[in-house]
Length: 483
Image (cartoon, rainbow, N blue to C red; front, side, top):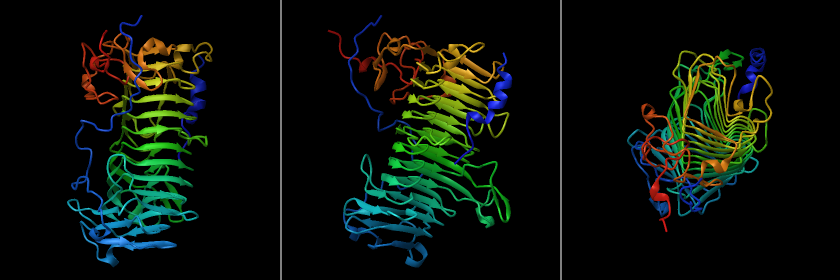
């Protein structure tokens, strides 16, 4: 849940508004690379633990059950490094894990054994829940394997009640009533749950497949950083998140936002995710691809976001977010929206080297009145509102719409066009590498100060005489040989 996005400032806005191919490219479909030369992608020190081939290798195997089974680490005498297994041969309806206390060097592992383990919680409030736990990892394999499959509950996987320092990878969550994965401890009248007393830190979600959810695909952190919750014991503020990475996840047909992040004050790194058909229920203010809510800074890059009734990327937290090298297609609203809602006097919004195609409204909409914004080296094609603005607005406002002409936004070296063929992509439907004759090649601004190392496809930036425009850096080796 969260507050409205651009309608938050509609009243203010109305007051202010008174006023030829060098080479023939081959048509190769190209997906996002599954590996990345970046380092430090995992906060755990155990690396990729291979799931046991035999359940006899596990320290504890969760027994079959026709109802909810509780796994309590204290009761079972589990210790750092213990391996808890879900057996492929067992029947699981709903599982609650409690009091799992690993260590930084030896987290407690929850994994599958003997094949793919399934948990079907039809009619239950959750499929798997983790409470009061720290230094643990839930893993279902490596690569494109999903060894743990969850379905049927109102919630898929929920990590709550003071749980912290964990990693979740290679699980599949589908056909749940609300969120696929939720991670937060809502404030209560217990002082241990409120801001200043609890921090959810160093949490990672990667290589998961989440689809067909009734609510968010991933709901990470509380949505009400400033407004909090008014309880019987008074006004209570939610905890913050310190250290968050969400990467390499595949999210399809999320009923609400595909990824929503709140209270991530030190910066949420959201990258290399593939999002399609997000917000399909089209619930107002709940239908975006990636959402940075109150109290969050977003570092958002190399994501693929395609088809949804809302915005591709919606930033309504801190005025300090960096959005680069994303491909955003067919957004039902704006490609990217930015508004500082929490603080002023921050570095502002950096929107660099994105490719935005066919947004139903504006390519980028900016409401930053107190922090600066830079919009460099972006490609924006065919915004739906191009022909809809009337004087004093013009069609050019559909590419980058500013709440008023005085807000501190600098535009440089962008390509704005209504003609997709003008860009000379290798395949304008699914391959956004540049052909040799593309006007985006070697036409960008020097953005070396932003320290962007790789483009959308994982190629090193600045491979020619100058930076290219858009999410892809030209690579002559990807072209077919001349004949």
